[in-house]
Length: 112
Image: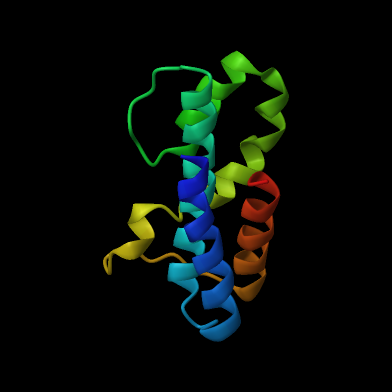
């Protein structure tokens, strides 16, 4: 699943460079990159998990495998709100360029 996160990473970066006003699309793909990375970690470790977009849930399971991941709670909490909810018109999430740049940098550091 690691390889599946790379198109989301690319989409976020290309959209940010060429259509920076599409903030919801950019942050959605940042969240998707990290989500797929976390799931690939769990699959690599043969760990059962429910399929969800909840980054905190996934991280809690990962911490049972490797407690060093605890340092990511605050960072992932930022991305958590950019999952599916941001894609619907009845959800209002205010995005700033700083928050988008933070999201891009966070997911770039998560996927190596």
